[in-house]
Image: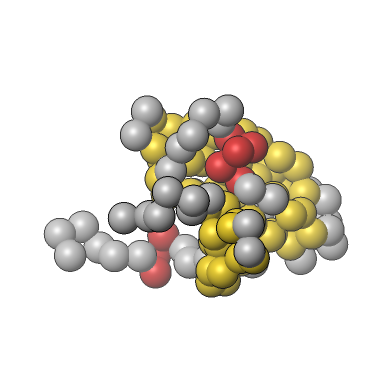
Length: 105
């Protein structure tokens, strides 16, 4: 349970190390279904998505974030509580669908 003053955010960073344009789709799997948006990341460029959930929906929402891409991209996220007296949270590297939990686990 979160404290009433908790305001959670997730920032994402992706970098395109390939020599082709990457089409990146951010997907939020929330209570009201899937919200998504597609972005272009040029070769050798990094894209920062600040408060990714707010970029995908205008309502208060939570859920899991999925990143799809036409190219292999390193992804890093930072989920944090933006409080009046500072912030705290954690940064995580992305994982592929092959690294996730298998069905029934």
